[in-house]
Image (cartoon, rainbow, N blue to C red; front, side, top):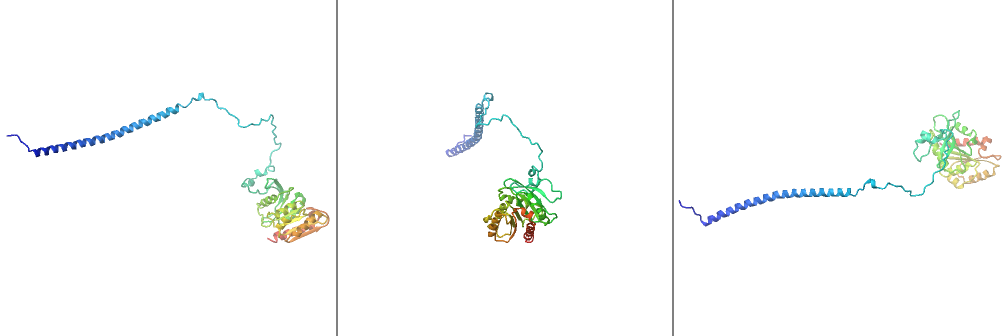
Length: 331
């Protein structure tokens, strides 16, 4: 059999197909190579970066550690004063109290009621010692706005009924005699307060705030009875904003016209001895500017202040009747 021969077109077609098949194989190898190479390149790059970061971290650790100096070579700390100081006293002489502190000496800090009051608020009258044998009066301590401790005596009526307060002001609480007890028997609550020299109006404000904290007290009606030098404080307080419904002045020593004009037209009780020229002059000046109801009682002689009540019984009787009418009758 003879050799098979192909025509030129057919040969070319077979060669073209062969070339196409080779090209496809080459393209697959190329794609596969680059796919594997990319992953490998990424892994190699990541490894190199990790090694580089670790090297940098180690470099900083060694660099910082190289800056630390051995503590044994540091100088010891020293202290320097920034200002001059006082020399210590050569000898100290402590003064120890010779008696133990009692409730009377430190009543404020030991009284549970006072200790529970919020800062800045008024303290209630703090009982000092015990009540008298009859239980009619109790010595109390009131703290003024400037911290001064004022000693007074409270007379609280028996029973459970509310009562109106009357405040008695004089140079000495003992000057009133039995007048506080007589007012107490009439159903009034009485606070006898010793007024200090040149007392500020804040003393009356502190006394009012303190007495308003008592049980059963009704401060909707309150009266002030002042004698002698204490009339100056009473007139200034009642005319200066201290709650006051009625005021009685026994032997006034000053005519504070501006305070009296502010006090108008509230009721007023005035009493003086005709032989006391100073008190009579102040009484007439006050009476001239008074615009409310005025009860006036003049007596003979030269008695002054609480002596008007002690030596002239009619003054005390008229005063109690007037308080009954003003406070209880007008309630």
